[in-house]
Length: 431
Image (cartoon, rainbow, N blue to C red; front, top):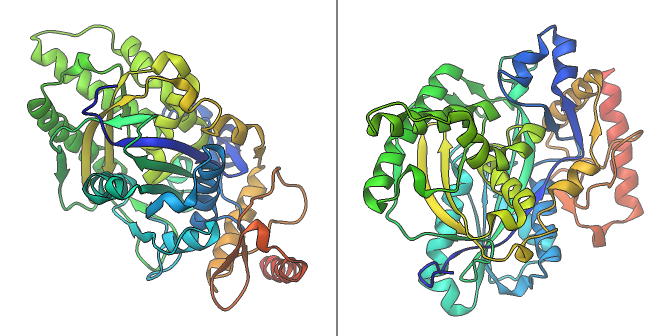
């Protein structure tokens, strides 16, 4: 690997909730042509967080798996940043909950970053700068986690673009998975109201057409800036990955760059679909099955590229476009590591998908109603009784006056009984 590529991702791990809703099931229940979702949006199913899952538990699952599967010593961590727009508290960050549940050292700085779906990229940028400025010299590494639940009103146009999940990334001066190329920044910011979620609602609001226009405008600016500064052009990338609010948006983004390149060359550039299949689709397959994970969607595509690409992506240059509504966006480039053994079998997507259970539409609505009911008094509960996918989550919430969680080693019968009783009461209130 080029010696100048000193910082990037040493490890990456994904957590996907244990339940999902097929788009065909949603379409049948709502009287919509399934092709509107399958072809129009490009999504096949969406992950559904159960009422006992939230951004804290998902972040712990992803980060815990990373520490375990890559054999990372928690003592080496000097920084933990969580990028999310699904915070569970207006003051206390997700990062401190994760820090406690994972048993990280007290000398580890923690905080969250928020800017809609750009939050995880903001966290990654901060972690890269920290590693270069001080962390690496002290022998420390940074842990970045993207954890979000995309939730819209039932029956709204945004409902089929939901999803949930978490992606954990270890940032260091040993970038075995992905080395970020040290080009000048190419960012774009504009004050727009294309997507927002007021404090008084658990569901996001979005102006779909405006958001698509803002996304493409930001891409045009970021691409142009990066191209001028780096001298890298359309043909210099083996892969191009994009923020994925829905998979068809990645196609729209790729097409915009393809058309721009065609115009630059003074004529039509052939092979749009073939090039898309070659450069973007290899990572997009997992987004089609999981749906929108907000801040983690770009990095879910990266995980999909690594898990399925294996040796075929060794050493490849990847262009990455991150977009957060509101808005802030960035284009940057990176090189995949030279040895697939650094990530083979550790990303976690295939294992997570193997254990998922498909929900019926009525079950999905019950999950939604119960989660929103419990949110009124800030309760987090044990796994739902009755049929459920395996394995059970490792990190669980317990009911109390304050938001509390427990790690596997802290489980006790009293907590389980308390949570089961609380769940029964909550479920009964909805009947």
